[in-house]
Amino acid sequence: MGALPVLSASLLRSTLVDLAVLAAHLALYPTGIAQERPLPAPPADGAPARLPTEGRARPPVLLLHGFADNRSVFVLLRRSLLRHGWCHVEALNHSLLTCDLRRAAELLGRHVEELCARTGHGRVDVVGHSLGGLIARYYVQRHGGDARIRTLVTLGTPHAGTRVAPLLSAHPLVRQMRPDSAVLAELARPAPHCRTRFVAFWSEADQVMVPATAARLDHPDLRAVNVRIAGVGHLALPVNAAVAAGVRSALAAPEAAISGQGALSVA
Image (cartoon, rainbow, N blue to C red):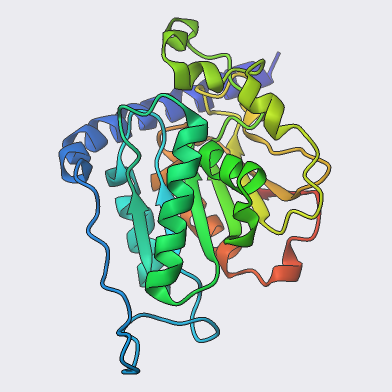
């Protein structure tokens, strides 16, 4: 009984922070409606490339937002990555008219191919918030995206499906994030020899994931580490300083650092 008031206080704090984040994000939302203008491709005439190339810099990072959102949610995370040595960070908007996760994964694949061609890198890293992480995971497992995505970091992504807000199930994308969806059944299938490594951040204070552990990635064929974040709500995950530090650590880790199922904790 003694733990209940502490838990309630923690949930209350995370809810208030989420509301503050929502208010700030609504103010920023218009700045992220337009698709980001990509940097130019390296010159084809043999002149020095203007962007980092394979072996000399970290892979490019692609940020993918969640349901009914846009790239403005990643303003702070992008700034954190650039400040700590990442040279190429882009954010991709998927259309508000998107009604099929599978189609969104196909479009993501085209963008990843274009990004690789433009930067000279063979592989990229992806950070996906909520639905964005599930789109990227579908691309990796079902469209051969493991050849292109080195590390996929997910923030509050419903890997096991979420039961939140049943009334929203009128939207096809929301139905595809339900535990009994055909999309999640496809992702539960065997995925032998998958080359992508996964880092899934989840929080017990995430009230959009029902249950909260739905944001864990537990698949016997995937190299996945689950990172528990204390007291951070769903909307705050992309802007939280501890999460940003965890994302940087995950992206900077050598290939061998994520070799199998595991669990970490970030305060």
